[in-house]
Image 1 (cartoon, rainbow, N blue to C red):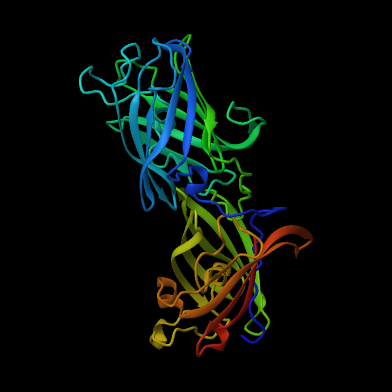
Image 2 (cartoon, rainbow, N blue to C red):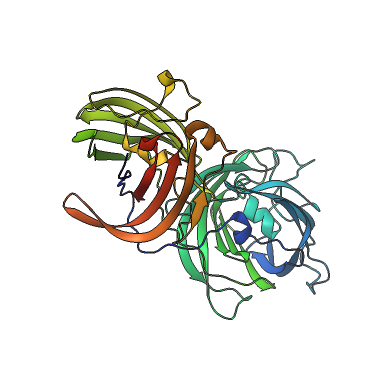
Length: 425
């Protein structure tokens, strides 16, 4: 290809882009980080109880927080709680890996099927944060439409479905003014515990970027049911503006998109293809491509995953019969009968190296190929990709604001595999 190749894929409209984020940004854990919460339960703990949380240890992406109610001036009737909670940061989000504490206060419902050896409790801030949502506790990336299912409890008998609702202002004593928080609503279910239905209900957690959870509200199930409320009253962490939650690569089961694509030399008559999102699970999806009209008769399937490091192509399978004689691609190590050819717009989009697009696409962001990567072993492509920012792009009779992502790619020894690709999302 002499003039480069261009892919136009209008997936979602957007007006702004924002800074990248990770699980660490949503729950910072520097060695000196501290948080103090005050919490009540409208039936089982009506005495406001202070609880101080500090960082016990860090080990790479794993860290442990510890809490105590001692030495905080709590009244004698307040419950005593001392414990730890462990997390691991992953590209899929923040995972809870372990916990331990003093026993649940005797006045609280028993959240197990037997009285003895019950390791479940809702008598602390972080027990309410992780209840039913251990993996992940908070999904990543946190974008519009994000939802996930998880389990929790000592026996894995607590289930939940969580939805990222959006960003809203929340007022807590730790800050003099309202702060912007990501709101996550979870429907939690536990069955078979002696204390049912206390372990079930609707929990809402407000996460502040740069701080962590600043407010938790658990509306327990049942008639005249209690409400547990946890509010941040003091911290040395600084609230930051959350990153944009614009979703440029949404994975929506059942979504269908039609593409028309041409090449000025090899595909002058348009190939019309339909791309369907067949399945979506835990941030991963399978796309299928079918022929509608034109000279390329193709059937294909592609796998993608959306994680904190962006949208990644993880596999691709196509079968085609074409009247359009596209040149074969490299790398040169492949035998001639295994050389790839472009047969769908998805082939054009994923060609080169991952990610296809960052999770939080910041104008000016650049990433490069890695000769030691899986992608290089498959495509043999070097180069770099840059987020250009939001541009107006005309598709048919309509004009869309779209995020432009441009790649300059070189496949040694293959001119058709080298050029400039601009994708619009």
